[in-house]
Image (cartoon, rainbow, N blue to C red):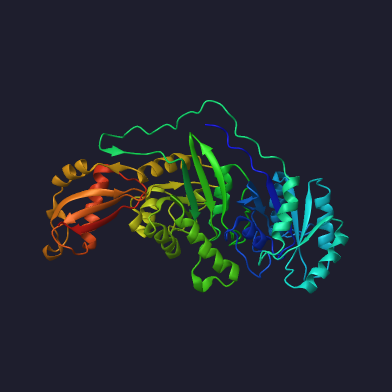
Length: 465
């Protein structure tokens, strides 16, 4: 395949709560970053694409920078922002027109001027003519290209982009060369065909502080997400694309999901909404469990979100090294088989999901997640022919189903109507909802015959005409 051309990149930087994420959302024309009045909401760097005057651009949103801050998370935010500055072709520094010019603004402007990259000053929150005059005070920062804007309403953003465009490098043309046709998966058998997805979207989900961001960094070999001992450090969802063994995996590290009653800060409440949104756009979810705490009720609730939305699932028991190296009180067995047995009991509805023990901090077993992801992604897209499904139907002994006779239906034939997740339709003698035990029995028989590892199966029924 030809190499995709690199897009000119704009980094948005500034102190906390000046409106960087609002400007980012305005440029990419969607609500990608969490926005709110609480400072410090954005912590990791976020990427998005924009188009202006027929040119595609990459935009990076960064956490609020306070150059001399010594606390753990602000220092990590600064580290993430420096990566964004290194990747950028032009920089937009955002300040708040409604506040006085402060020493951190001056220090940050000096730091950005030293990069030598094209620098533009967006004086944000200019919502009245009076504030437009006030914006001129920010010329004292020494940044020549100054633009009063209102990111929330879109005022002045066009002028800002018009000025940035000539400063960006011309777009590269895609490299030429012989196109290699995409390899198709060989049929597993004549009746079961698996397709290889072009890109597998993987959501990393779980409670706060179970090691999701550490797992993302280990899987991608980057410091892509901020890691700290503070629960709930990740708030926005951040993502990274990794090519491995001929497949592309896009990892999404979502904010820690908490019950609504326990999400006190507005940003954390929004994080739950964003996390579930990104989960629903994924193909596969990695459910991260803290091995030192065992499977909790909240773990099961989070797994339920993924299961009910039809995402494929892999259960990742993280921090396994801490269990095996420490004495346990018997509540958390260090024996893998016994631990898995207990985990399976707590997650009964995920019997189809593979389970893997890892240590994200040391990297142990993390590499094996890739082969599981590839297998589960293929199983998710497996399609069984109608003729094979009906041959299979003849061999099911429905008398073994623990369902009252009054709740049973006669199945004439069945077909697979969809993949991702695999969806089967039973054509029956009555137009009634299938009894739960009956549907589960049919699902178990399908799995025994055809696999579908790691993916939920949806079963529907219709009355045969």
